[in-house]
Image 1: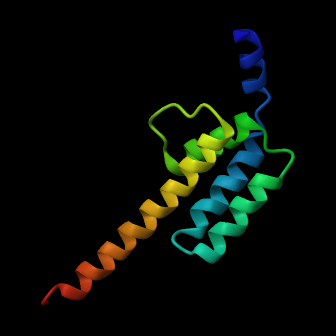
Image 2: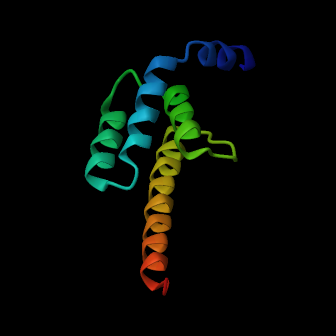
Length: 99
């Protein structure tokens, strides 16, 4: 079984992974840009589990192991929420500074 997993990992489409990860990073905190990319990832038949896990690791910088397609999508969505909250917090802090 270990050999089968290694063979699949070697078949990873790096161009596809880089493309989707770049588009996710380019969306920054814009929900209108982020949601279509995630929807496209979900319906793209070329994006198998190894690709989506690699996309999640590239976009979210996931430290813990992502073991499934669903977990990878959750990590992507969670990272987006973290970015939005961080941006909102910084905006609020900038408004409250007296200088």
